[in-house]
Image (tube, rainbow, N blue to C red; front, side, top):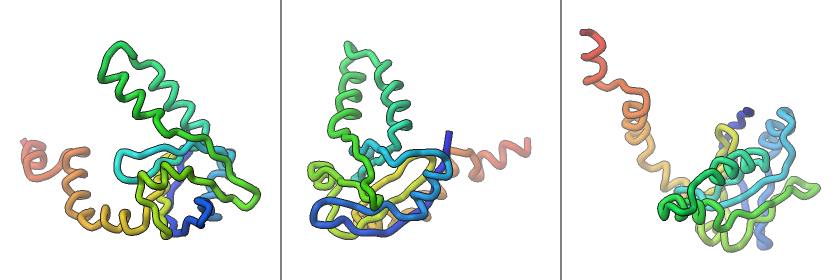
Length: 158
Protein backbone atom coordinates (compact mmCIF):
# COMPACT_ATOMS: atom_id res chain seq x y z
CA UNK A 1 0.00 0.00 0.00
CA UNK A 2 1.21 3.50 -0.70
CA UNK A 3 0.66 6.63 1.36
CA UNK A 4 0.09 10.25 0.35
CA UNK A 5 -0.33 13.24 2.59
CA UNK A 6 -0.89 16.97 2.41
CA UNK A 7 -3.40 19.79 2.45
CA UNK A 8 -3.47 21.96 -0.66
CA UNK A 9 -5.47 25.05 -1.61
CA UNK A 10 -6.53 25.70 -5.17
CA UNK A 11 -9.39 26.72 -7.42
CA UNK A 12 -11.86 25.10 -9.76
CA UNK A 13 -12.16 26.82 -13.12
CA UNK A 14 -15.33 27.64 -15.05
CA UNK A 15 -15.08 24.32 -16.91
CA UNK A 16 -14.95 22.34 -13.66
CA UNK A 17 -11.23 21.55 -13.73
CA UNK A 18 -8.88 21.45 -10.78
CA UNK A 19 -5.09 21.39 -10.96
CA UNK A 20 -3.35 18.66 -9.01
CA UNK A 21 -0.68 20.30 -6.83
CA UNK A 22 2.88 19.50 -7.87
CA UNK A 23 3.66 18.13 -4.39
CA UNK A 24 0.84 15.63 -4.69
CA UNK A 25 1.78 14.66 -8.24
CA UNK A 26 5.34 14.09 -7.03
CA UNK A 27 4.21 11.85 -4.16
CA UNK A 28 2.07 9.78 -6.49
CA UNK A 29 4.69 9.43 -9.22
CA UNK A 30 7.44 8.52 -6.74
CA UNK A 31 5.28 5.59 -5.66
CA UNK A 32 4.48 4.50 -9.20
CA UNK A 33 0.86 5.67 -9.13
CA UNK A 34 -0.55 6.94 -12.43
CA UNK A 35 -2.81 9.99 -12.57
CA UNK A 36 -5.93 7.92 -13.32
CA UNK A 37 -8.63 8.32 -10.70
CA UNK A 38 -12.22 7.65 -9.72
CA UNK A 39 -14.13 10.49 -8.07
CA UNK A 40 -17.29 10.04 -6.03
CA UNK A 41 -19.28 11.47 -3.14
CA UNK A 42 -17.65 11.31 0.28
CA UNK A 43 -19.28 10.58 3.60
CA UNK A 44 -19.31 14.25 4.49
CA UNK A 45 -20.04 17.14 2.13
CA UNK A 46 -16.91 16.50 0.06
CA UNK A 47 -15.78 14.39 -2.86
CA UNK A 48 -13.41 11.44 -2.66
CA UNK A 49 -10.75 11.04 -5.31
CA UNK A 50 -9.22 7.57 -5.40
CA UNK A 51 -6.30 6.47 -7.54
CA UNK A 52 -7.82 3.91 -9.91
CA UNK A 53 -5.91 1.03 -8.29
CA UNK A 54 -7.32 1.97 -4.87
CA UNK A 55 -10.85 2.29 -6.27
CA UNK A 56 -10.55 -1.15 -7.82
CA UNK A 57 -9.60 -2.64 -4.43
CA UNK A 58 -12.52 -0.91 -2.69
CA UNK A 59 -14.91 -1.94 -5.47
CA UNK A 60 -13.79 -5.56 -5.13
CA UNK A 61 -14.70 -5.42 -1.42
CA UNK A 62 -18.09 -3.85 -2.15
CA UNK A 63 -18.78 -6.39 -4.89
CA UNK A 64 -18.73 -9.13 -2.23
CA UNK A 65 -21.79 -7.65 -0.51
CA UNK A 66 -25.10 -9.48 -0.71
CA UNK A 67 -27.50 -7.68 -3.05
CA UNK A 68 -30.42 -9.64 -1.57
CA UNK A 69 -29.90 -7.86 1.76
CA UNK A 70 -31.63 -4.44 1.57
CA UNK A 71 -29.06 -2.65 3.75
CA UNK A 72 -26.12 -4.01 1.78
CA UNK A 73 -27.88 -3.29 -1.52
CA UNK A 74 -28.49 0.29 -0.42
CA UNK A 75 -24.81 0.69 0.46
CA UNK A 76 -23.75 -0.71 -2.94
CA UNK A 77 -26.02 1.79 -4.69
CA UNK A 78 -24.63 4.69 -2.71
CA UNK A 79 -21.05 3.53 -3.21
CA UNK A 80 -21.36 3.41 -7.00
CA UNK A 81 -23.80 6.29 -7.50
CA UNK A 82 -21.94 9.11 -9.21
CA UNK A 83 -18.61 7.27 -9.42
CA UNK A 84 -16.75 8.58 -12.44
CA UNK A 85 -13.35 7.74 -13.89
CA UNK A 86 -11.24 10.85 -14.47
CA UNK A 87 -7.73 11.16 -15.86
CA UNK A 88 -5.29 14.02 -15.51
CA UNK A 89 -4.60 15.93 -18.69
CA UNK A 90 -1.12 17.00 -19.87
CA UNK A 91 -1.06 19.83 -17.30
CA UNK A 92 -2.21 17.65 -14.36
CA UNK A 93 -5.79 18.95 -14.35
CA UNK A 94 -8.82 16.83 -13.46
CA UNK A 95 -12.30 17.53 -14.81
CA UNK A 96 -14.77 17.17 -11.94
CA UNK A 97 -18.30 16.19 -13.06
CA UNK A 98 -20.81 18.98 -12.46
CA UNK A 99 -23.26 16.76 -10.55
CA UNK A 100 -20.51 15.85 -8.09
CA UNK A 101 -19.19 19.38 -7.62
CA UNK A 102 -22.77 20.52 -6.96
CA UNK A 103 -23.21 17.75 -4.38
CA UNK A 104 -20.16 19.04 -2.49
CA UNK A 105 -21.24 22.70 -2.92
CA UNK A 106 -17.92 23.50 -4.58
CA UNK A 107 -17.76 27.14 -5.61
CA UNK A 108 -14.37 28.57 -6.66
CA UNK A 109 -11.84 28.03 -3.87
CA UNK A 110 -11.07 24.41 -3.01
CA UNK A 111 -9.01 22.31 -0.63
CA UNK A 112 -7.45 18.98 -1.56
CA UNK A 113 -6.74 16.94 1.55
CA UNK A 114 -4.62 13.85 0.90
CA UNK A 115 -4.25 11.09 3.46
CA UNK A 116 -3.57 7.37 3.37
CA UNK A 117 -4.21 6.49 -0.28
CA UNK A 118 -7.05 8.87 -1.13
CA UNK A 119 -7.84 12.55 -1.57
CA UNK A 120 -10.78 14.57 -0.27
CA UNK A 121 -11.93 17.50 -2.41
CA UNK A 122 -13.71 20.23 -0.44
CA UNK A 123 -15.15 23.64 -1.10
CA UNK A 124 -12.74 25.85 0.88
CA UNK A 125 -15.46 27.39 3.09
CA UNK A 126 -17.06 24.00 3.80
CA UNK A 127 -13.62 22.67 4.79
CA UNK A 128 -13.05 25.64 7.09
CA UNK A 129 -16.46 25.05 8.69
CA UNK A 130 -15.67 21.35 9.12
CA UNK A 131 -12.44 22.21 10.93
CA UNK A 132 -14.06 24.76 13.25
CA UNK A 133 -14.59 22.22 16.05
CA UNK A 134 -11.63 20.04 15.24
CA UNK A 135 -9.45 20.45 18.38
CA UNK A 136 -12.18 19.28 20.76
CA UNK A 137 -13.43 16.61 18.36
CA UNK A 138 -9.92 15.33 17.66
CA UNK A 139 -9.20 14.88 21.35
CA UNK A 140 -12.48 13.03 21.88
CA UNK A 141 -11.93 10.87 18.81
CA UNK A 142 -8.40 9.99 19.89
CA UNK A 143 -9.70 8.87 23.27
CA UNK A 144 -12.40 6.72 21.65
CA UNK A 145 -10.16 5.23 18.97
CA UNK A 146 -6.97 4.66 20.94
CA UNK A 147 -8.33 4.41 24.47
CA UNK A 148 -6.95 6.76 27.04
CA UNK A 149 -8.82 9.28 29.05
CA UNK A 150 -8.92 9.20 32.82
CA UNK A 151 -10.99 6.00 32.97
CA UNK A 152 -8.56 3.94 30.89
CA UNK A 153 -5.52 5.46 32.59
CA UNK A 154 -6.80 4.57 36.05
CA UNK A 155 -7.57 1.02 34.90
CA UNK A 156 -4.05 0.57 33.59
CA UNK A 157 -2.61 1.27 37.05
CA UNK A 158 -4.46 -1.67 38.60
